[in-house]
Length: 120
Image (cartoon, rainbow, N blue to C red; front, side):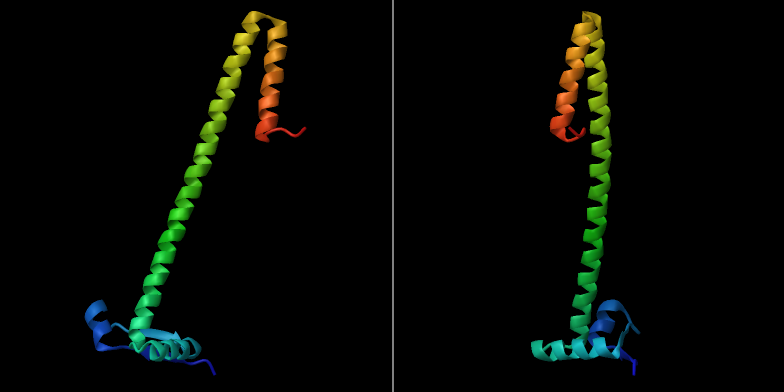
């Protein structure tokens, strides 16, 4: 039987506003009540801690997503700079003659291989 448990206490109402209450599935409410009894705290305190933990988790997840986006952007910028440097190197080698171009291409290929950008 899946019912719901509604929790309200004076402290929670003062903290969160009049009429604030939390509704939990009975299974979760039983776990919260057991933990509250074990710690000697009101069940509402445990729920507040759970809510705060959930907010902190969501904030950390958002920060991780922001960092991943920033890393991807930096990788694209780095690749763009690398292509630009390779182009400049080839143009300089081209000005020196065909052998210099081949030497520069071989050097660029070796650098890419070491960076793992090219197989082989």
